[in-house]
Length: 241
Image (cartoon, rainbow, N blue to C red; front, side, top):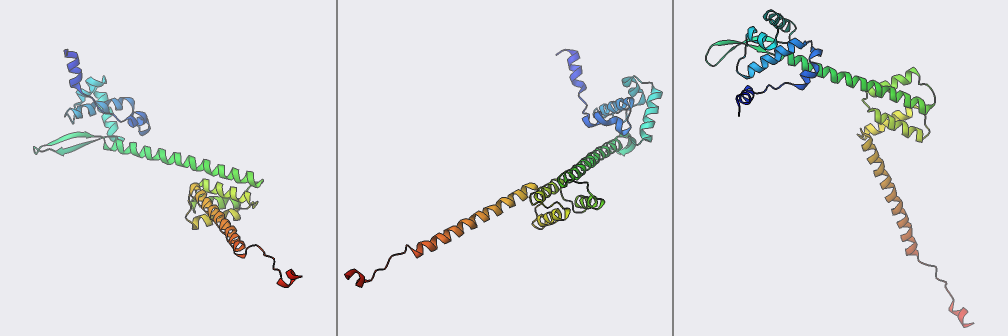
């Protein structure tokens, strides 16, 4: 192994969050500040928890005054802080901490999730309104809009359950939200909260109806067997004639 390879392996690696690399601009971190963060993380992995601005300047290619400025901005923007920690030897040392940076990053992830959910909810709502108007063959009234909103927001009915209730109403030729509401309430009382559960319950009911039909036919057949064929009765006196 030559000296270059040995030096390369000895330098080690620094783990970086891919989510940070994809979203650092969203939390207010600049390109230069990201480089400074990476250098500090690299030094921290090597046991240097508070690298000098001179070292950061040398490795980043930025002037030392610029490094000072950026470190100050990162602290002001609550992306970093300097903590004083007492070590095992009893001495106190300063170190850089990026807990606040990752708090912002996690908050950004939560906000992104909420935004996506809100967009999905809006899409589902519009889809349901369009489906009902299409099947009813008319625009919905303000009261009907409010009813559907209550189903979604207050009763927490899943959009697919409302669509299924609409299908049931159309099959029964009952084009009203009141009829749909009775269907949804009936499912709720039976604790049916998914389309799969409703389908399973429907199949179960059909199975029971089929069994009842077969039992009824078998019962009638048994009565017929007990009755037996009609046997003609002849009088003995008639045979002697």
